[in-house]
Structure formats: C-alpha cells, structure tokens
Amino acid sequence: MKSKRLFLLGIPETHIERAITRAHKLGMEVIVGDTPSSLEKYQHLLREADERVAVDYTNYDELFSVTQRIHQGKKLDAIFTFKEAGLYHVSKLQHEFKMCGNPPEVVSSCLDKYKTRQILKNAGLKSPGFALCKSVEEVYEFWGRHNHPVILKPNNQQGSIGVIKINSTEEIEGSFNECLKHSKDDGAILAEEFIDGKEISIEAAVYRNELELFGVTEKFLFPGTFVESGHMSPYKEENHRLYHRFIQNVIRILGITFGPLHIEAFHTKDDLVIGEVHTRYGGDNIVTITELAMDCDMHTPIFSQLADVPYTVKSHTSKSTSAIRFLNPSPGTVHSVEVVEDLHDLEGLVDFNIDCRAGDIIHPIKSSYDRVGWVLAKGSTRYETNYTLDQALEKIKMITK
Image (cartoon, rainbow, N blue to C red; front, side, top):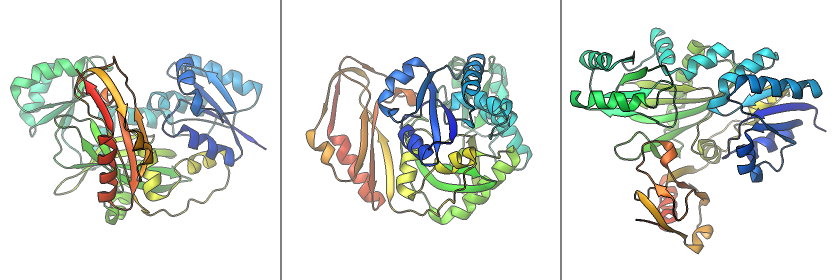
C-alpha cells in the first residue's frame, strides 16, 4: 500500500521510469507534473505513474496553484524535480509547504554562475579569474587583466548555449554580441579564464547530512566546441578521496543540505579546479552510465529522505565501464536514416536513440540541443566499451545533403 505522496515535477526522460519504480518500492504514490506537450511526448515512459498533471513548472504562480489544489485534495508528503528549469520554483514550494529540500537562496546561488563563483572563490576554493560583464568594454578590461584565452558564457543557461572561446582581441566584440543573444541576465554575460585541464563531472548526493559520491565521469568534446561528444564512467577511482573532500568543501561553502549534485571540475597540472555546481544530476544519460558503471542507485536515497523512510546506501565500486557517444552527422538536410538490422544484437550495446528523420535539418553543433542522437554501451574495460560504441555508430547510416 502506498502511504506517501510525491509530486515529481518535470520528466527526466532518460531515467524517469527507474525513478517511478524506485519511489513505488518505498511506498510512494507518484504524481508526475509537466506541460501537456511533454506529458504526451513521454506518455510511454509514464505508464507506471499514479497520476499525471498538466502544469508549467517554470511558472511559479501556476505551479503553486496546481500544487495547492492537489495538496488540499489529499496531502502531499514531498515535492521534487530533477530538471534545472524547475529547481528554484520547487525549492520555494518545499519551503512554503514545509517539506524536505534545499533552502531557495541556496538553489538560487547555484543557478547563478557568477554568484556561485563569487562564493566559492571568497571561501578559498581554486577558481579561474572571472567577471560579470555588461558591456564589450568590460570584456576588453577583463582580457587585459587575465590570462588568455577567455571564455564568454551566459550567466544562467545550460547545455553549452552561447559559450564562446576568445583567442584574440579581434574576436571580443563579435563574441560578446553573440553570447549576449543567449543571456537571460539583463544584458550581462560571464567572462572566465580558460581552464587548461581534463574536464570531469562528479555525481553525488547529500543524504541525511552525509555525502554519497556515486561516480566520476570523463567528458569528451566535439572539436572546436564546448559541447559534449560523449561521457565515460568511471574516471580515476584512485582519486575518490580527493573528490570526496573536494565536494564536501563545495557543499559546506554553498550551504547545500539535501539532494542530487552534478559538479563540474577540471584536473590541471597543479590542482583540481571548480567549474559549475548544480543541485541536480547531470543530463546526457549520465545517471544511466554512472549506475551501470558503479552498480549504484541514485534515486532511492533521495526519495527515502523525502518520504522519511529508512534506507541504507550500499557501497558502490566500479563493476564495469559505461559510456555514451553522440552522433555527429554532416550538417545539411537529412536525406535518409538507416539502422543496420543487427545493431540491436550488438553485444555490449545498452541503448541508442536517433532524434531525426528524412527532411530534418542538421545544424552545426553549437549547443547540446543541436545533437541528434546517441549510442550507449557497457563493457568490462574502456577498450571494450569504446569498441562497441565504434561498431554501433558504423551501423547507423545518416546521409545529409
């Protein structure tokens, strides 16, 4: 019998089915809320949901009204989201309804890249030089004071939208104007020193005041961009204690007290340098590849605390290597897409997705949203996993003109 009610806002399509199943195992009734279009698009993933509710969770007034109606009909015990666009509004609801969650001001700080950088640097955490620039003149000033190259990025976007690397002063004005097109921050963009290092993401959670580090993922980029071409887990397990101490400092400084963490960092020749901090798990199927590689469960600790149900997080170590790689067809109009029949039988292939068809236009990759598909594999070694990914990509024939 389901004794607790969870209002889950937003559909993380790559792991929503596992999330619902795991919440059910804890005795939770799961009500999924999202826009009508998303509920329709992902209805095949929501078959086990107890209820579906149409709501724009990015509109706080609408979200509050819908939540209050549900709560008055039958008491809600928890409200939660895995989606970046819903984090702040959901934290406000958690506070308003006196439910478990991070304080809204903490979530707000993590959503503001500039504020996050300020707080962490002032606390002594290794960070690149940075500034919030409201004019091209301020970018020129930043260039003159800091090491080159320089990165420009919108202060509150995700998916590498509008992120540009500047290598010379001649590129500054055009890059500033282009980046500004994608900014939601009243005409301000974030300038940062370029970090020359290996980029990783750390997936973790704060569970009943303890840090649970699930896994570390290595990132790969499409040439000449900041868009991920793939991810592989695990990465350098021998550094587990270093990562654990690093994240403990981050959550202490920022005041994060609950829930998922997706923290980007860079291994440089001298140190581990902080990138961005998110109070959610990573996208790009990172939850899936982390769970496959580390034999772990990243949902149940979150839901058990929300439901106030006892749960012991089992120790997790690498059982295999898991990775995702994104398709990279030539830009142009899609003439045909063919999947070789035996792709489905490829040993080690876990899943794949192709999000385009004949007639669609393939754009040059400038953000995560320009990618049109992926293949995901698991193997006993990095070599075996990469071999499977190579084989899978060869079996997907996409012709553009």
